[in-house]
Length: 184
Image (cartoon, rainbow, N blue to C red; front, side, top):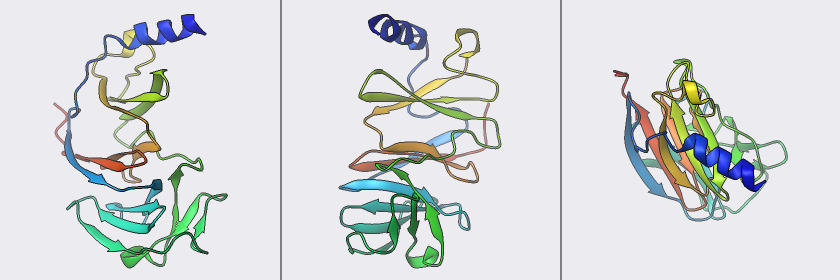
């Protein structure tokens, strides 16, 4: 196992660190204490549902505003076994697929062909690596253009359903990137 850790660390050493990949802006970091899960709306791609030990919230990823909030601790609206949660506010009629403490996953590729990869050579700390179309951080000859964008104890990380936002969540905060469209 020790050799595998060294091999992975060695493989990743040439990937540069930057908080902002090409074509993206690091938009906002929002504190959410006791965060357990998150999930994007499929109807309103910019709306992100947060689930925490003190209720639910909805964040508009276009503005960074918290646009809905309740303080009800877990109720009928929360189903961690089926990885779903009823939304609130503007998404109150939608069942949101969630990812986080109870499992699940968010999209790790978008329709532009960009990918997100989580690796943990220094487990439990993970690296979140963004790669452009056709690149892979785990294949040395295909690493060009890949960027380490975050390092933390992630609950989950991934793209929104439309691929225009990246979110990385820990137990205490959410970091959101917005796609600018300029990938030069």
